[in-house]
Length: 164
Image (cartoon, rainbow, N blue to C red):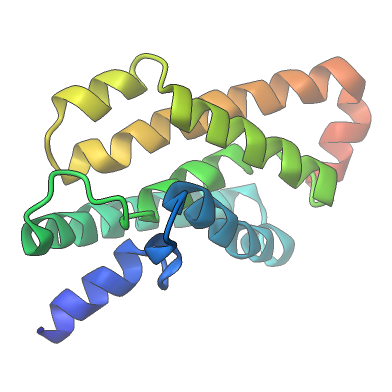
């Protein structure tokens, strides 16, 4: 296996978290949380958003290679798509366990439910882009819900905790 292929597998499985025997998407989402926390703690939402965009394109590249190497349309071991979606869900989440738990549950809910256009991307785009894009949509739905929850409960305290 070439270095390029090995690199694609390491990144596509998000450092092996996608090789979990069951619920690989959940493990990939969990593995995304500490990285997302670090990006928000040492940076801000713009850093996390920029990282999400960069990892999205790395994900398209790595998913394409893993799909070709395994001859599988959407291998369950690819979880870099969960990383991007989870990070989008974290963009406005306070840096505390409750906020991260809410963002995690919301992202997993929408990733599993796949409301439109996530279901469209999942079923119609038979490519690495489709693998990545359905999780982007799930992450955006979770982000929207996180914003609504923050505004509903206590918007000043919620947004102040984000601003740092």
